[in-house]
Length: 480
Image 1 (cartoon, rainbow, N blue to C red):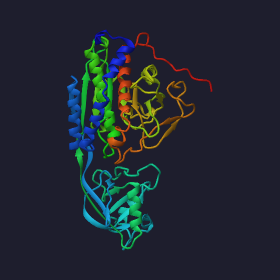
Image 2 (image 1 turned 90 degrees about the vertical axis):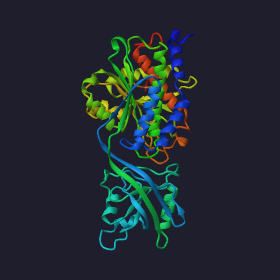
Image 3 (image 1 turned 90 degrees about the horizontal axis):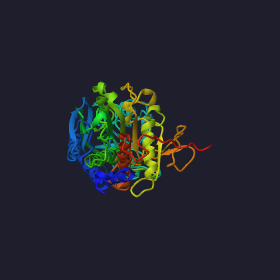
């Protein structure tokens, strides 16, 4: 049948088929190759242009917005080595100041327990500290250290060859000494070296710390008819907010968004969308939270037109499950949106190229969808309107989260009773967040996330399978 003659489930499968796994994987590789893509930096601007070109090529009208100024950091080059060889996993924390190549004595964590004073054993040294060491940085600075070296310790399966990455809380150019993180393997080498006579490490870092304006890209698939003034917002943050490679967090979310745009722009051209429908606005934020906050704050009169917000964050990998999550089912006005996604997930579960395990989950917080929610639902308190807002993802954070399911939301796609297991990424906010171990290892994740949103949006427009257009379906709650 011609595309315009398709209807119902057949139309949904045709639209889903327009999501390209190969294009999504290629785009993640392209974005990671540009660098961390932090808002206001050259790599961030280059990434925004790549996004704009892809969306424009789909026939969408594209707008570039320079958001309010925010602090940024760029680590241009660095090195770390022991006398016997390099420490290849080294990765600087964000807002670390430059350090000319220096040979520094190595000091163990115990030196930070010695009160400050003349001749302190940490003075002029690089001090090794465990990954979870509250206050260690401030104590190292107070005792005259030249650098801090973060050892993640020996946790099975974690940081084996990659380093955790954070930003210095003293950031924005106020941090006086740099921090370098290391893999567990290199951390062990540092500890062993520190036990030798007159141990030393050679470090260097060239970085830039300043302020810049993140660049957000907006692209629109026009609405039509009586509902043409409504907006369904599909968004993802375009930066690697950790300052690392950021393949899963969040090049995967950006790639999934582009695939939703690909599928829906084809559906519009094929006549598969209703004559009265909301516009779909695609937003790739220049900087997570910062840019979405600026968007909401600068458009107060437009917020009431937003029928839904669908956000992507960490859509490329999972440590222990192949599952799709769509969150916020404890927000009362999210119900029509999430019931629609749940029905799509149920209808297509197990079909080739779709998902098998899926569930809605309560709010977790910490991503751009929460800009559009009130504070009592872990939101930002910026938007007064009750906008249905969700995030679709395959992992959250860097460790599993166990949650009590919201009453009434038992999912037919979740195989277990009891608490929900929300999957995580072993490479979250680390130098290991690279395509080869995230998106390339699980190439189906972005494809599934994009299909769920594309088909959900079609149903929100009223173009779902016959008999399901306006029927949000409740899963039966099994007896306890």
